[in-house]
Amino acid sequence: MDQHGQIIDVYVSQRRDIASARRFFGTALADHGDPSKVITNRAPALANVIEELIPGSLHNTGQYENNLCECDHGRLKARLGPMRGLTTNRTASVVIGGHGFIQNLRRGHYELCVDAAPVLRLAAAFAELKLAI
Image (cartoon, rainbow, N blue to C red; front, side, top):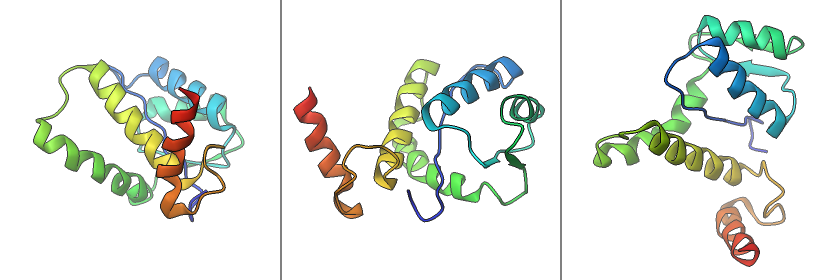
């Protein structure tokens, strides 16, 4: 895990409603387990679903609490500038999901390349993935 123990997950949908929030958190919980703390913005749909699915976790909606997440997405935003954005939800989902995977891989949140030094994790992961393909 990285120094903050954070895992960033992404989900692209047309609307920010309870059904979308439930799908996102259902997938995230299945992939990463129950967190002790969840940081989001103040969207009512997120608050309802977090209270329903993860009642034991602290839901933090402080003004500057998600700065780590926003900084993390800065790299993605820098790459999207020259591309003039993403035109479809499918494209956005693939690109943003890939970015989230790489960032979490660098942090050591997967069993892939756990023995590699943090600086070499990405290269080691691709070497392991190449053998699997």
